Image (tube, rainbow, N blue to C red):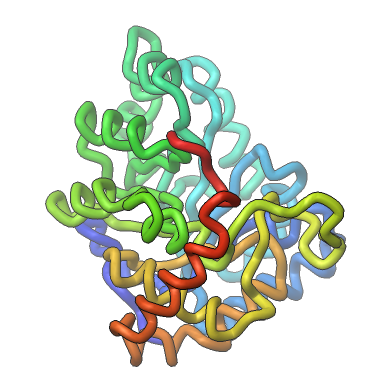
Length: 288
């Protein structure tokens, strides 16, 4: 699997990310097996968060044999300086590492999130101090709101952006286009989520196979899944984060080379547009 440049970080990372939620709630033995499988298949970028229950603790153990040869990203939902510092220190200890390659403000969604983060005693103070000390090497954020993502990028020149680049949202509403453009202009590294999903779950739909995903994966539909991945790369993604289950992760690994070798074309776009119209009233996000 080829490695790709993550914006100006100059990190050369795998185009598929291992998200720690994949092993959340699993045994340590299973987590070890998943992480080893990922490394053996060329994955060198791992992402986790304290909000993923026991995922940090399991990853700290599972990743220990490989830590020097991979990139590790973590996140914080804390918005204040004191809260984010406390969580950063705990994540470093739990993950058994002395630094994070990327540390991210997690799930920026509201104007209040942005105001607090960048206000007096806000989390950005912790991030800047930690980067100066070499505890974190790059500063990023994830967001579920395009408006607030744009605001955050106006206030600080982030190194990476973790953002939903969902084909249905994009083709129906143009959602994500402004973020993609702004990221491209400033050479930030773009990591994309929600590329392998299509819509909200329907009432009564069986979720047993994907209990950790709050929206409907397209893993069982090869054509849609691959086209959705291509769509995200066409928007400038360096790498994709699959839904939080091993089946979806494996789908990305199985298809990534073919996706990158055959970028989104007009036939793919027309197909996705037709599929998007079928679910235009079930999109994963309301207007944000």
